[in-house]
Image (cartoon, rainbow, N blue to C red):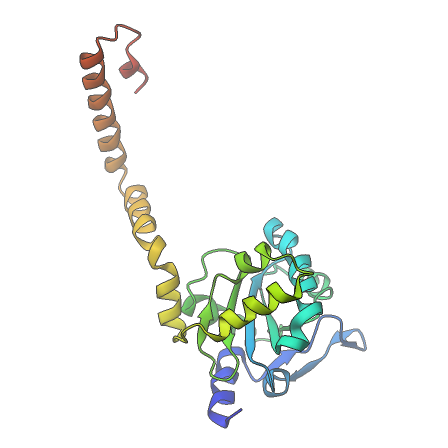
Length: 229
């Protein structure tokens, strides 16, 4: 791995990472250099999660099983990007995880915030695949991809990882934009409506007019539904 690539990932993840939730010394998580942890890896998966999140609690055991079975063979590393509300929550939750994590030092909040911003993380759990050799974006569909897997099916797991190898690499910003492109129009429309209550009244008005027109056509003499609006 070139110095330039190491520098890019050091900047992205920080120069040090916790080496694994199951690795402790004097009851503290052990830190190693980012360079050492991602050496010889093909992929780095960023796992945005938190102990208080029920969907995260359901997905984490599935991801742990996937990691324990295939991380070494497929040359991948996962990095936990925590949204836990306290150090105790982090320690209890991360302590069950076998992979790396953004540390809990003073600079961690900035690193996590910048990652979430660049990747346009809107909810958790989220699992983003990066190319470990370049730091470039591969895919953000990973959670759904792994959930669809039968984890014990090694051939299917290999096929999934091979698909990442054939996926176009993008900058983080380009990848996030591409990933959210299909949802942007709906989200923008919804936000516009929520920020402008008059649009809601307008929609109700057109609904009333449509119902009235329907009644005129069908000759329905039932109760006037307009009284409910």
